[in-house]
Amino acid sequence: MWNFTTGADIAQKDIKKANKKTFNELGILIVLIALCVFIGLFNPVFFTATNAINVLRQISVMGIIAVGEAFVIITSGIDLSVGSFISLGGVSCAAMITAGINPWLGLIFALILGVGLGFASGLCVVKLKLNPFITTLAMLNIVKGISYLISGGLPIDFDNPVAVLGGTVGPIPVPVILMFIIIIIGHIVLTKTEFGRNIFAVGGNEKAAKLSGIRVDRVKFAVYAITGVLAAFAGIITAGNLNSADTAAGSGMELDVIAAAVIGGCSLSGGQGSIVGVLIGAGILGVIRNGFVLLMVSNYWQMITIGLVIIAACAFDMFRRSKQ
Image (tube, rainbow, N blue to C red):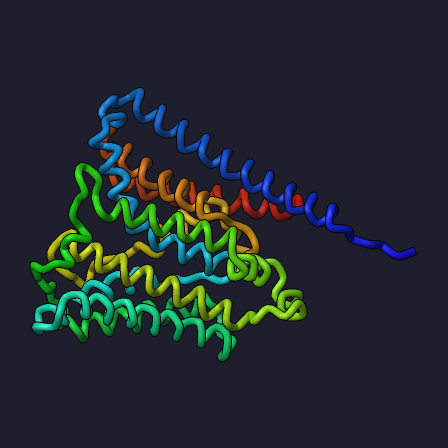
C-alpha cells in the first residue's frame, strides 16, 4: 500500500518544527529573565539603563561572531579559530592604516583576509576531509601567527575614521547597533532563504541533502567564510573601540561564542538552532558576567559557573536528541 505525503502533511510538520523552536527559545528566554530578576534583587543597579547598555556592549562582539558560529554548528561543524580572527582583523586593518593606506581600504582588506582564511578552513574540512575541530584548532594557531608577523607582537595604536565603529549613536554604542543589524540579517538568511534551508538540511542529514541536489560543499565553504569575515569585522570593531589593535584581542572568545550558540539551542550534532536563541544565549553569558561583577563574586567562580552552564546546555541537547 502506497504512503503518500501531501502538502498538508508537510505543512503540519513545518508547523510542529516552528512551534518546537519557539518553545525552546521561550524556555531560554525565561532562564535569562530569571537570572536578571535574581541579580536585580541583590543589586538594583543591575536594572539601570546604563548597566543594560553596558551588558549589551559587552556581548556585542560575541553576538556578531555567534551568528557565523551558529551557521557552522547547524551544519554539524565547529569553528575554534574565531578568537584569532578577531586579532587578525584588528591588526591587519590597523597596520595598513598606519602605513598610510586609506582606512576604509584597510577595513576592506581585513574583511577579505577573514573571508579567505575562513574559506581555507572550509577547504580543509570539505576537500581534505579533516575533522572540523582539528582543522579550526590548527587554523587558530596559523591565524594568530600571521597576526604576530604583521604586528611584531606589539599593539598598533591608531586614530582614524574606523574608530567610529567603536563609538556611540546617542546613548547606544555602535557595536550594539551593528550586532542587532547582523542578528536580524542572520535570522532572515537562516529562516527565509534557500541558503538557510540548505544549512539545516546539511546538518540534519548530509547524505540526504546531497541526494536532493544541494551543493553541500558550497554550503560548508560559505558558513566557514561567513564566520571568518564576521570575526574579522568584530576585530575591527574592537580595535576601533580601543583605538588600538592587539594580538591578544579575542583570546578565549571562541569558547564564549560556541557557548552562546549551544546555550541558545544550537545542537552540536547539527540540524538545529536559531539566531534568536543565539542572541539570548549571548545575553545569558553577559548577564552572568555582569551579575558576578555587581555582586562582587570572584572571577574564578564566574569561569566555573559558565563552564557548568555549557555542560548543562550540552547535556540538555543530548537528552533532547535521545527523545527524538
